[in-house]
Length: 458
Image 1 (cartoon, rainbow, N blue to C red):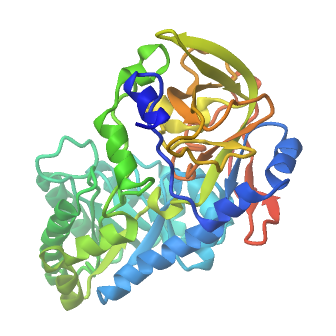
Image 2: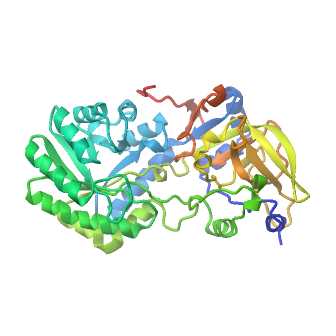
């Protein structure tokens, strides 16, 4: 039995969960100075983004469409990360952006996205957002009949819309029921063909099972054909996002998830439900599975219907990380055995999973010498919890006791991997006047610059 397994069995430390790492991350961790220089320059926590990985993820999604003989349409779900460099990467790759507020729309335009490459989503859209969308020729996913009524009243020119469908047997507050879809189409008919053009339908499903997405998309093919008989283009179906991300090795994830215990955590307080940090069918592979199910790709090709997707987390897979400096180290005790409680110079607002009553579980890397891996027969791991710099007891970046490879020291850096998707800025705040961590844009040659959100409104 390894030392890690023994400590895990005794409830002192959680088992390791090592994130998949890209070459750019390994080069950054191996550099003798760059991380230290960045920490010195910033003077606090910071995030690192690598836009070339976003470009690679876009290529992989396009390859999945091409394999199925489809062009497809990709709209980056901008809510997953506010960084301007991600939008610009999408613009340069001719991808679109999914936005849900006037601020997001302005930021997308400022990053180089054209108006017709915008997908407008979200509930109860403001009149300002609807007006801006019509001005720029964006596609608008209509969520409710009253929203459509307001759009017709304020439009200045013909609008392109998708009608968002609420899946059957769903308790979702989003989308329209069958009766509401009938009412929406009646409104559009009365408004006339020069007012609203129905380009098709959209939906979003929770969970990560490809089959329900394929089935509902197949049903909407039939709806599109009916709409065409009534004179509408009906040439697109958007299946939304929710593409799984594979963060970690299957065996490690199984050992972690199957044996999850509250006793691994500070004060015996465990986390709520966890994201599935390993997925056999993730990202573009999940899209391939959707297109293969029930002959969906064949039906889309046969009828000339374009499938649209709105990936967020998966488009940012392995495109960023978050860096915190160790400010303090305390020794605490559990069942007569010590563990470390370290305080870093940021807060759990920069790891959003923690603020949803859950835990971000890919292990952080301790730097320098953070690339050491625990091996059978190695020195004992150091069980360590990670707290934030605020005065809240609940401000814990890692509630579980992580098996660090050595003693953490003041001035060390703790690097959380793969945080670009929904983690690093969804809940950012200047609580207690602590500054929001800046974003560093890293280039392939390891040169860097600050990310500036062009066009962002306060």
